[in-house]
Length: 101
Image (cartoon, rainbow, N blue to C red):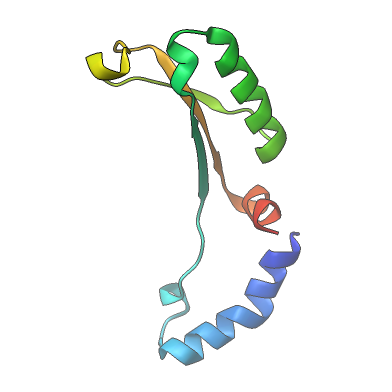
């Protein structure tokens, strides 16, 4: 188990409950997920840049990112709907706590 998770469960939960004056343990604030995203502006012209961004994010987060696509065309940015423009990773559970630690 992650070091930060054990510290949260052992020490911080009780402190937060007392400090905030909460009655129920389910009212205690907690972290549910971490989302990391990377927009690659020049990805519309060069597809190799997006592959590099995906591999970099995989090294940072420890899991394979999902490629994000443009929702609509924007002439000012020279992108079309459906073109790949970035990537994102959602971390939950132990991976989330390991990333924070």
